[in-house]
Length: 139
Image (tube, rainbow, N blue to C red; front, side, top):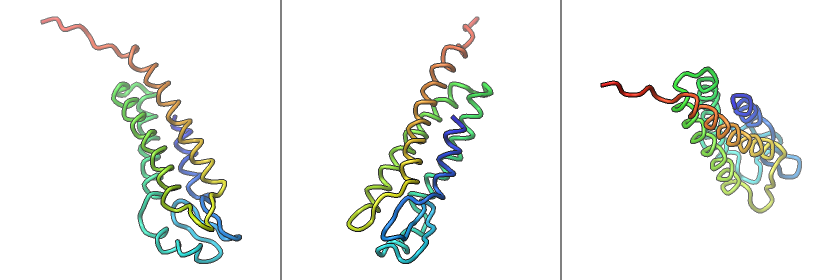
């Protein structure tokens, strides 16, 4: 799970948007021009930076779940964060892909690894919940 989250972070610096040889990453880096008027909107804190921030949180939650540190809570948080990553990736598409702007290959990498993060989070939950059954109450 932490590996897929790290891949989401790395994919944020790949080209997520393209227009006639110009490209932009999810974190706001624009190469080659104004990118159909999106350069100013992309450089402010937005969806792409939120994706990176949440992926970093997913790395921590995945590491906690793997080490058994509050495994139930960590795996549940990891699932919630990974689903939110998928939602933000789709929202990024809805916000910025229109007219001459098309999706770059980095968006596909980010989306696929976000979906993989959801699957590994479910796997972590399946492994963590039965393994960490609470002790019986002896009062």
